[in-house]
Amino acid sequence: MFNPEKTAGISTACFYPMPLEDAFDIVCGGLKYNVCELFLNTQSETEIKYLKNIKSKAADNNIRISAVHPYLSGYEHFLFFTEYKRRTLDSISLYKMFFESARFLGADFVIFHGLAGRELKMPVEEYAGIFLLINREAKKYGVELLHENIGTVNNYIREIINISPEIRFTLDFKHAVTRGFDVCDIIDAMGKNIAHIHLNDMYIDDKCENISKTEMCRLPFFGNLNYLKIFKKLKDINYIGDYITEVYRYNYTEYSEIAESKNRFEKFLERLEK
Image 1 (cartoon, helix red, strand yellow):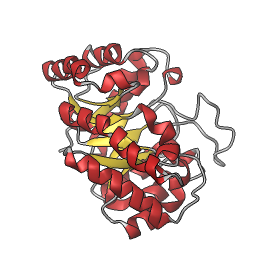
Image 2: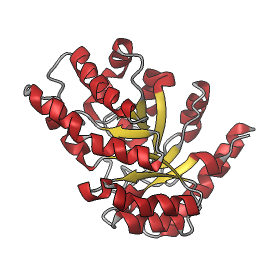
Image 3: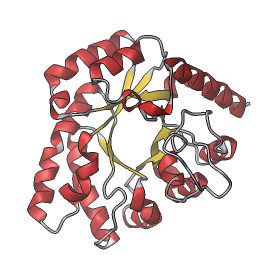
Image 4: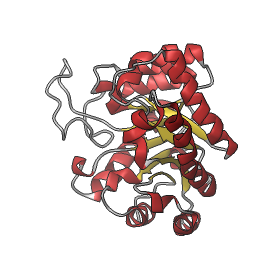
């Protein structure tokens, strides 16, 4: 039987720009999530002396930290996928602070955006090779780098897996649909290489047109994505990872909406299991 308390989670990104420690207090204070992804917003939040308090509160509230999300994700195209190779190597060393943070918190994953929406200007083989170099460093810390399906990478998922079957992914629903992809097509491309999910919803017309800033990322079950179709597809590939609600602060008004979203999601999954 599906255990929603183990797999339904939330990202502290949902509360940005609230300070991370305050956002985590909200997660601990009544939303009743047992899993949390930490969005680390600045370098000082990667330091062990800062994270000790987060780790302690997580233990006190029986919350598992599943992943950390680097604040440098918007710069990864510049840091790693550059003609200036020394910068690539230096940036791998820079990311050690995120790998160390994840290890300290007991997280399994570090989330990676890569090129995001930028054009791929190197062979896919080279792109995958650079990712593997970074992931090799991550694994020294006992964590795994996961590539999120953001922007350009949507076009190359199958090629990346064919080149390097060990590369695994974070599936984010909004980053599929807003780039013109069906979520189920992305699931087909990733298959069993999906290790983590960023869960969100949106309200769109049949042609996926006129998606406003508010509608492009809603709380789960506050939009009209075909969740039944999506989750049947996830069941077909035997996905067993977490479902992390990740929206923006302007995508909801009250924290009670988050609680209601979680309630709707858990009831949906229970029905799906029958």
